[in-house]
Length: 320
Image (cartoon, rainbow, N blue to C red; front, side, top):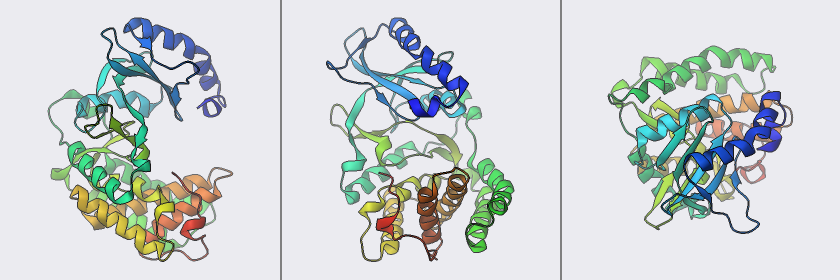
């Protein structure tokens, strides 16, 4: 977190203000820090999470994020989900981008769960998270997957050209076709749901009481639930079989879709779109060739034609 925000003036200012933000939040909501001696808060790329106790002694977590767009939308999405497969939000302050959420077991994620079991848990959660839009005001603030697809349709060809066509045209065209059909022509408006677009294994934690798992850190959009499958494909590649990893990846996608009641072909199309865009973003950022190769391997494999010249699945840069 520090290295990411220390690169900009705004980030450095936020880091300098963070101790005061924490103190103010503890005072505002009558919280006490619940860390063992020498223990450190949890932190990710964009914020910090501190285990706390409420005034009644209940276990909770204080989360303070750098105020960028996704962080500002997170409490909106949490209120819409209202604990339905998602961690429950208890308090929120817009000005400081801070909130209190229920505490989950940070040491028990789906990352360490055998993959066949993790697929079933993930599928069950997606079914719970797939709530349809209703009359609540928060829905109007959530972006649409169709709009994301339209943006990709406009931007991906130019970005591909600017990078001197770094992968075959057929893969770019596969992504563009999916954007045009799933994003506009064949959009299934009647099946629009709230989608956690970053629902990978580390973003699913066990409840403290042992009753199951809940999602955290939502990046919410509205549209096809199948859009959520891709992060579970580009993570845990090390769990794929050494022999014919490509078939193993497609089998994982099939299992995830079966567990969640999703359309496998639509999930594959969105995975191609997302990983093609990821690969371009990585290639646009110095030092991320390994990440780009991973994205291209997943994208081309899900498109049915694994690109030659890439590292094997076991040699790709691994996420999780």
